[in-house]
Image 1 (cartoon, rainbow, N blue to C red):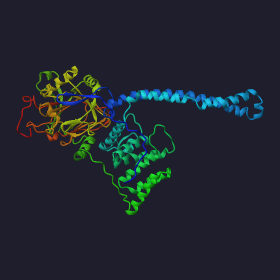
Image 2: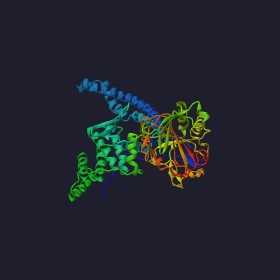
Image 3: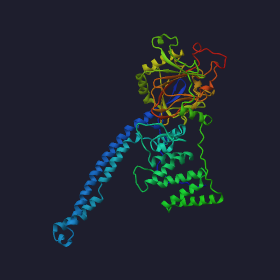
Length: 557
């Protein structure tokens, strides 16, 4: 077995220990935290924003430390200047100087007492301890190791879905490589470049998942950046050139590029001739290459995903918004002012855009006001918890859904009640519990997404049926804000996607009138490239809609 032991440079923090109790809400099991925490910070941009305040506090502690250390070092310089001046100007003639009893006395005192006080001064330790104490006060609010992993995975997800150039990301640019050169996908107002250590930790996360496709892509620029800055020391860095080359060599070995792994290992040995483990690896690689010639055309494949069959379509729709319906070609796709024959909408009809007929998808523009959207976000933020997905008869978190969510009853706030009334007026559906679920408010995280899925249950074991009100017949999704880039809702089978439209609401039927699931509603929340995406979901169930949406044996209805 190949030797790939690495010295540990970081202790892995444990999963957040949370005290919680189970609460049955319309048959759904939700986790309610006993105390507020920033655990799983990476799954919600609003939590990441809260971390800015934490770093501001740390900056204050660091500034105090620097000021204290500056005073201490200035005093050390004063002492150095005093003594060095004596040696330069007085002690040139040692005999003459020591003839003066005052010089003799101060020399003896310095050597017996003052140098001792300088060397063993506690001031440096006291300054360091004060800095550490300040850090420890904020420690409970700091990201955990899983947050670093989650953020790194988020960047790799954005890289994959939007076909972003790693070189561009390292330089703070969102670019895609084309035959004509790099093309900007999004131009950020503020940009930041990544250091060699930044790239190393992303590559290391991939490496530890045995995802050598991504580890190679990120460790290569890490190695280049560390080579440029070799022998330059940065206090904040975790890795070093040797660490990067070590991980990169083994990554190339695992992808079949043994000759390059050998070359990198020799570079490590040149930097650290005493490294016996690398020496053994070199011997191993040389034996492999002697037994079979090196293959220079090694093609590294992306790792498989849970949505592998639809991956190409999904990513294309996220990148391009897909084959959007052309309204001038189909007169049934149109925009109008919609009242649904409801008196509440006669004086203020809703602007409706029919986006698709199969599946039936409409977009209601300006469904919610800025004030209402702000209220919903602010009211739900304290209760945000990691979003879950159906897993057999239970619910659990999953890598293919990165967000946090909270559930709001219609009695939680007058705005929630108004939204329910507005949804009922527009759709004609019964949205009162238990015939509809509470309003689910979702905030997406770093590279936040929800891979292709159905909103309706596809298994009789689904926890959705615990409501005893049938399956989810319809989805009403409200965009509570806009995002700078990404975050579209992609309908995979129907081959179109809808961008995030601030304050608009997307509505579609999940089931045919015969109660069967509509396969064309397979959809996904594309990763948020740049921005803070908030949505609110209202899921309406079959029961209670008998007179609102009548059944039909026709499988196409």
